[in-house]
Image 1 (cartoon, helix red, strand yellow):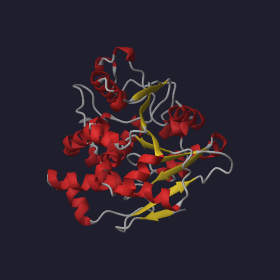
Image 2 (cartoon, helix red, strand yellow):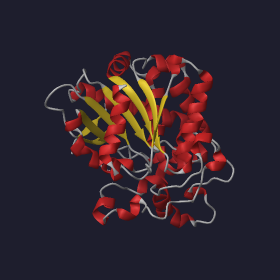
Image 3 (cartoon, helix red, strand yellow):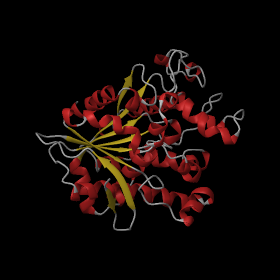
Length: 340
C-alpha cells in the first residue's frame, strides 16, 4: 500500500482507489477517527469509480503504516502545558495539509473535479487543524489547496471534536463512572456503533437526546463484524497514547479555539473561499454527534454571514458507521455535498 513522506520525515500511509479512467472526478480525502482507521472506509471503494470519485483514506500518526510519535510528543499529549499542546496540535494540521499538497504534487490529483476533505468522527479535530493551519503554510501550498479544495465535510463529528462541554446528564463511556476503566474501550465501540432512539430532534432540545436508549431491534455495527473485519479496521493502541487525551477534557479549550479559527475566522475562511463547508450526521447517532451539529447550526444561523456559511445534512436512520453499514448510501449522501 502507498505512503507519502513529508520533508520533515513524517510518513503517512494511505489507501487509494486510483484515478478514474474516464471523465472528470472528485478526489475525496478522508481522515479517520478514534481507533477505527482507514480500513473502516474500504467498503466505499467499489462505488468510487462508478460515481466518478477517487477515494484516499489516510492513517493518522501512530496508526498502521504511518509514523509513530516521539516519546517527547507523547509526553506533551499526556502532560504538556497548554502552549506545548497547542504547538503540537497545530503541527498535526500542517502535516496533514502538507500530505494533501504532496498528493496534489505527486499523484496527479485531477484539477477539474477538485478535492473534498472529509473528517469522520474524532478525525474532525485533525481536519479542523488542517483548515486552521492554512494561514501558516507556504504561499505555494496555500495556492494549490485553495485552488483544489471545493468541499470541507465534517462527517458525523462528535461535540468533543469541537471542544464543547457535555450537557448535564449526558456522558460517553469514557466518562461513565459505572464503567471500569479497563472496560471502556469495548463499551465505547459498542456504544458508538449502536442505533439510538432519541426524542423529537426537531426541537434542538438536549433533553430529547439519550445516552443509552438504543434500538433493541438493530445490532450495533461492532457486533456484526467478523474477527478479520475488526482486525482490518481497528487499532486500539493509539487511543490510550493520544486520541483519548485529545478528544477529552485536557485538550477541550485548545480544540474549541481551533474550531473557532477554522470555521469562524474570516482570514482563514477566505483562504478557502471556493470551498463549501458541510456538517453531515445521522439521526440514530450517539447524542454527542447530534449535539455538535446543533451547536454549529445555531452559531452559523446567529452569525448569518454568507462568507462563513456551513450547510447541514441529516441522514435518516443512519448510525455512526454508515460508511460500513450502507456504503452506497454514504457515497450518495457525500456526492450531494459535492454537486450543490
